[in-house]
Image 1 (cartoon, rainbow over the protein chains, first blue to last red):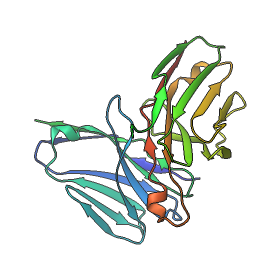
Image 2 (cartoon, chains in turn red, cyan):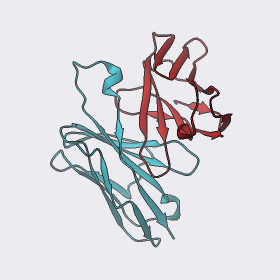
Image 3 (cartoon, rainbow over the protein chains, first blue to last red):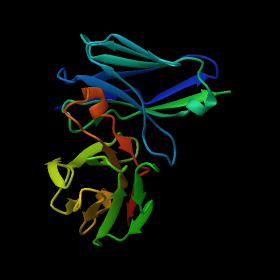
Image 4 (cartoon, each protein chain N blue to C red):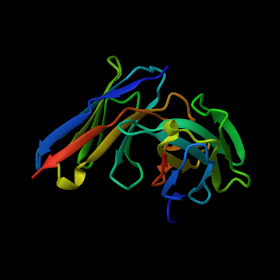
Length: 110
Length: 120
């Protein structure tokens, strides 16, 4: 079955770049997603990438995809305290559901 | 548009009781999804509707769980004879699926704040 894995924790200093990594197993996934979850709030879609792309940039966010290694990363430039949250990668092996990783807790230190 | 709403936000119940949660999707969204999220884990898919039709159910959805979307708008998720293992955050999401839309947008699901269930 599908499996999406992420490291659990990441701490960075304010102003530094954050890189959150994810691996997935389902090679049929055509789209991969990054969601952000803040306490008391719903999951917020940050960005997604088509599997035929290597990179996608959206303001401070850069997504890198290595399809051969099934590795996805999210880089946040100039990380701010407001970026502290849990970040989930997800793949969509079907057009009907998302399969999420366990999430990476990002802590931004002042 | 106020986004996806869920009610209640928190529910505490005793083991063996029945509970029902409600989800109001973004208007005009034809697809509605239910997920369950336990502490330290990502959301796990439970079921989804396209309009009023329930098209897929995960094996996580035991016989004690039932979901409905009678008019293709709001949805309810009922858990009968709750067990302590049912304690989790229940998330609802919605989107508009169209065959004429790119796949990425079709999976852009908008999530509600969730209902946190605690079974004592």
